[in-house]
Image 1 (tube, one colour):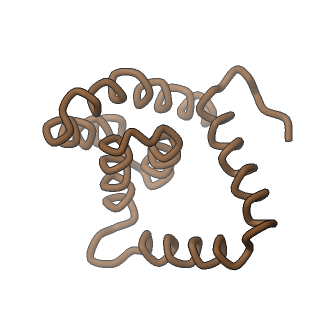
Image 2 (cartoon, rainbow, N blue to C red; image 1 turned 90 degrees about the horizontal axis):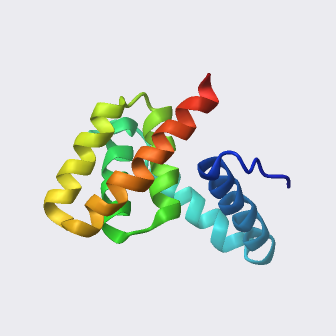
Amino acid sequence: MQFDSRNTTETAILRYKEGLGMFAEKMPELVDRYHSFTEECFKDGALTQKEKQLIALGISLHAQDEYCIMYHIKGCLDQGCSEQEILEAVGVTSAFGGGAAMSQAVTLVQDCIQELNQLKQ
C-alpha cells in the first residue's frame, strides 16, 4: 500500500488499517468478533453515533492512544461533528485528564482536524 506522505493523519490511519488486515489474516476469528462487538457498540441507540464518537475521542485522549485519537476524530468528522464540538469534547477530557489530554489537544487533535478537512476539499 502506498501512503501519501503529505498527510500524516491519513497515513497513520491507513497504516493502522493495513496492520489490522495483516493481523486479521493471522487471527481472523478474533478480529471478526472484535469488529462485531465494536460495530454493535457504535450503533445508534439512546446515544447517536455522533455522541458515541465524541465519547470515544475523549477516552482515546485520556488513554493517550494516538491511533484511536486520529481514528475517532475522523469518526467525529464523518458523523458531522463541527470543530467546535470536537474541541469542547477535548475540553471536557482535559478537565478530567489534565495536562496529558491538553497536550494531545493542542497538537494532534488540531493537526488531524486540519488534515482531514483538507481531504474533503
